[in-house]
Length: 524
Image (cartoon, rainbow, N blue to C red; front, top):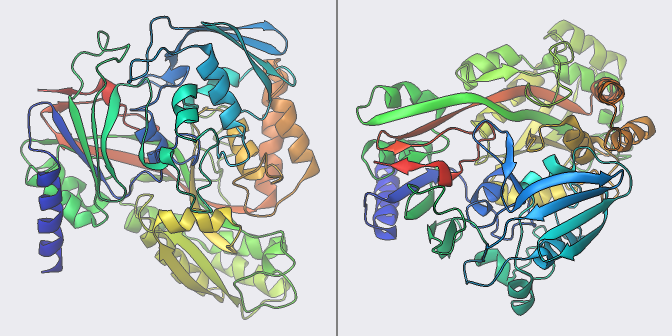
């Protein structure tokens, strides 16, 4: 009865959003973009929405190969300077011209304290407009991966930002409300027609889009509707109320595949799911252990790792749409190796022995923070972990909440134990180290909520961003991963396998980033 009401409500919302037409794509997933400000939140669905309105200098095609976007070419002109030749004749959707000044403005905006993307460009000392169609980015040392780091950096209009008082990115964790949170104006294939956070977003074709002759068949209109309830998303797809569901519930994939008029695409995602532990605080904020931090003891962390039966989670929770992980980065990312990705074995007896040696034979209590609308079966994964860790005496108070509350809580360093997933848009391990392992100093390590601070790991993270000798760099990355694994600051769980479901009237390539790029979509 509850599901019926939800389905009716969702169907009504979709129907009201836009009447079905041959060129309207009705898209849903479990959660909404956190904001339309393209530099505020480095979160997958948020960037996925932004890339339809804004363009980066360089983008990735469906094979994840770097291809020109607003920059037609790029090259290193000396050891510390990259040159970007911009595409001529590009305008923003309001008809104003795109120039090098907009790139310089956007690079400086990304480096602002409130930006969640500043770690991408930590090496950039200066952005210079050489002429209206040439930009130089000067780095604090050689940076061979700067073009990869720019694939997720979106370019805003300097004039529009100044006019609307959004020259600095929104502070999401402080719940700041700015004009850029609900409004957007870029050079991308779509414009925002309507934005109601957590209800619906309507995008329409940008008539001034520079790529309209290259991508001729993408939808005229996109209606995005977040639908948290899994059964409701499935019912809406089967009934024809939706054309595309990004995150079909794993338990319903067989039913979708057998439904006439629907199809599925699947691929290993460039994303890993793991648990983070506060290893740095003198005392955990959310635990019954007082005066010390049980997570500071590596034996406790290893015990918890060994108590997680990842094969059971893979089979029963993930329906085999996951690969067990020993690293918090997957195959496809430079630096990943099969040997490094080997897990500690599931060993309940060994885990209990470690807990006793660490002085916790009867365990302790701790709170686990978990999103319930971000990753595949995220809350169910946490529930399984709760049951498994109870076997070694770790009693967990599970707090599952929407990602709109979960991520700000983490960013305020207000969690002792949490679940997180991490994709790698640069396809390079440096991205993982710079965000998740480097010491969190407000500029680097901005998603390192563990409190881990390792001098050698910090040195390697900086060095690998500057090393141009491939063999030397590979050795640095391998050493860094060994240190990172040995720290056990994170408990790796699995690498996701994603499944996209859609009407057979939609022709759209799947991206291993789980970020649909609708300029590649065609509708019959």
